[in-house]
Length: 147
Image (cartoon, rainbow, N blue to C red; front, side):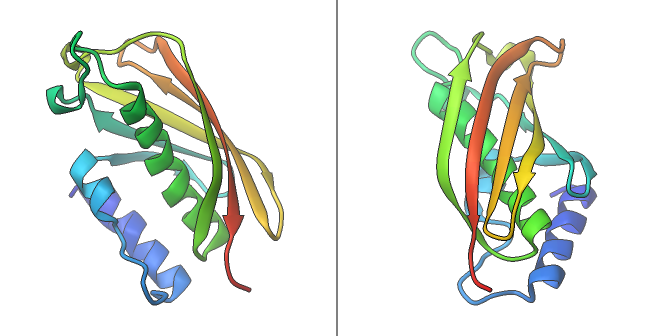
């Protein structure tokens, strides 16, 4: 895991006090080989994920479900960084615009906070290929758990 990932997850653990039953980073994040690129507290998070052949459909393009998972693996850590406590997804909506294949190497996810209350965080996200072409958009509502 790269140093930005280690720093980000160490900060999450420190801020949340390592709540019982929470594993940071989660196995799904490690499996997808996500990388933190840029973060501005309470504003945005930018991450990248490699486009791997094992996650492609029969036509050789990244499965839409994997694009959704990349958004989820961005909104999730961002919600923890923002709320400083565990959260849970209430919904995740994805609109697909263009396919992406392993030749393009990575998918870059940019997430922004639309609204943050005591109970909820609403996100919007955009996914780009390395040529900065829009691949998909997403929205998600996360509920902040605990008090």
